[in-house]
Image (cartoon, rainbow, N blue to C red; front, top):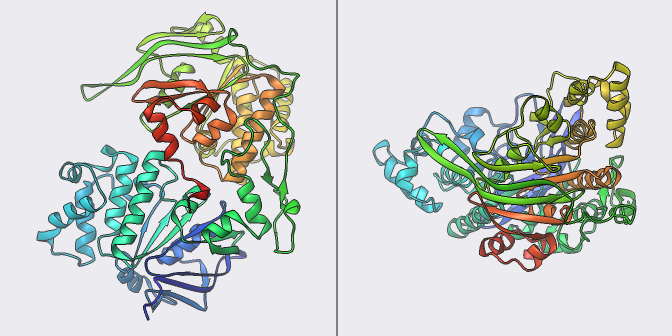
Length: 559
């Protein structure tokens, strides 16, 4: 009988008093794709690291069984693990730029993996590297072999990682959030590639993800983790369509799958639920918000009330003597009080457009009008006045919040241009924190003391503290778990209803844009290929590229 690619029985992993994994059992058979889903802190990535012997030395590990291809790994030292890692078991990571050596060509890195593991002689490494790049469908492999990681797209870098992982034909492939950083079309290509390689080699695959659509499309079986424990497992279709545990139900309720009415409050998982046992009810775990946000008190944005207008915007960048056109003749009108979404793949120009909209970047040509005033070349006092009315919320609050600053100092920073008194500044900061659901006590603490969702609330509080008229949200929910994403979307809708603020929402998550934005534009290669009411774009797309984007979205019902 063939041994499982991975067999884990009663695994527990602790860091001092904290138990990251508690009594977990998982089996992956040859040729099987098994998913582990859960939110940040659930322990899923800890299991992935354990499967490759990559836990830190201070981790306390116990298990009744931990076998890879029938060989026990319990008690192995680093020397023994190095014989397994890359040979019997390989791993691909979420962000290949962190895993690839920036100073080596990708060809040299793949060749190094081949020779270190004794897969091929040094003289034959180049030919084998070319073969592996062909295996993962790398375009122009001869050219890519001579390039460095920074010269490749995100999808191409992930193909390099997969090629390296496949070098020794492993029995087990562990993929930790392999598509989280990728656009939907590239994500679909990588998922198809993983399935193709599984079919060719009969290897077992363990996929770690918080994206239920990816799990639904890819996996034969799934394990749902919550606070270090497996709370539900089974055939993927059964778990995702008829979940038994209240946490799984709540997690699925938080997913934007097109059934929710646009711009209504989403169900969220209650933050005070720490131990949801099988006897708990769904109501114990989930907070359901049924009232639509867009109330009669705030009418729909009028077509003739335009707050931001882009007219024939062009933006060129020059690198090494080459001119790259990032934005190409874009014209848009954004109405006061609306959410306008912009979607597109990496390199489409959407983030450059958002930077032009805030004058972080100036256009090469074209004009930007804000509230009827041409601000394209604004400087001095006019620029300060413009920037006092706009704010930006970025994707990762870890990057946008200074870790050395208290929450109070970070949130108060935009107020410096208003020259308020100390008391006025204090009142504005506390009021802004409370408006995003945080207590005034949080002002004294540092960013690292908060969860990802709380840090994004702090970033939103900072953006709203000046009472802006226009806020750019650049991938503001992309780094968040699905239930935390739902909380932030609810918050953005509440703030818009309360203040009438206008949002420019930049994202590659089409489901989020559909839910939040009344109107949207689709960008490709610096141009707008489609624009219109969000529901119309989703239900009756006119452009071929838009249709392809929509077809690439992973579906929960795909299993």
